[in-house]
Image (cartoon, rainbow, N blue to C red; front, side):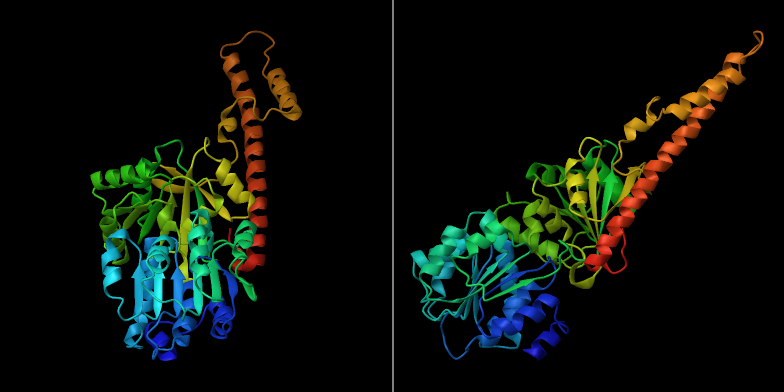
Length: 452
């Protein structure tokens, strides 16, 4: 196993792997929470394969994933070990189109089964195509998503025919409602809670004011200004994803898109193209934000923010994986800042930029109400009124002289500009102080350099 890991590029275990693998090898049931990109998949695959008795032709472990893409990814990871364990057999059960194929090749049982809840229930519970008496371990991967998608009824049916298995639950979040549901299946002999940050420490977060431009038009400008190595663009609806993809094609930008609206064959083709790094830009719905490992994503762009705050962290977690740096960019304007404010309140360390005329420039004001800065009476205070009166008095002529009104206006404007500068400087100072405070929070949470 160690040789296999070394040859596939795994030398040093991550924190979740270090904590979980020894427990899993001893058959302990556990809950493990860790940020996306922290190596959760291999934290359960390694001990499952290591514990498999290859001399027995029977199912010994079941891995349940919420989507076809996640199940196939786990299946592909497991198949990598077949080079080193030639007798090891793993099967994937996902889409409707594979039912006949699934039913055919089961005269010799696989050691490991990977699939989605509905298909596993169909194959293993309803059709009884495999004997599950030898199952020793069940894994629930991305358990919070399994709960959100309403799969726990199907999972409960699977557990009803497997006698007291070791159960390992992995998730990017472990909220109380999920814990309550999991108590039906997991004894919680051991719990691991990893990084307190929702995404890896290497991810830098940016709020980009697009100045009321169309987000898709702004994306074209952003790509020209940023020139990302590999950019993953998220939108909350499949209609926006498809519209964005069409716009990029019109602009001659190589891109591929992925949504839940694609058929099975189109989904598999899109995932294959994405993983083969055929395109510089990937446009996707939040379906691609969960658990999918896309190598070398340098930038993640959110054209909007999802209604569920945690989905932003899943999006951002597609970059900064396995110790690499990454950037997450969120487009917003003055009319759409409520969700951005909630992320700031949650401690997300954003900095601020403005996308203006195809350039990304630093925004000194941030989320402060910029429109108020242009209002004549926005910064009027007692001292300003006092100095305006003095300016008027100093420019009042003893008798009417040419251009005296212009001179009076210049003097008054000079006072107003002075106080306007002071007001803006005050906002900037407050913003810097807030960002410094966030930087200290980030540093204390393990960010290392305390960056904004």
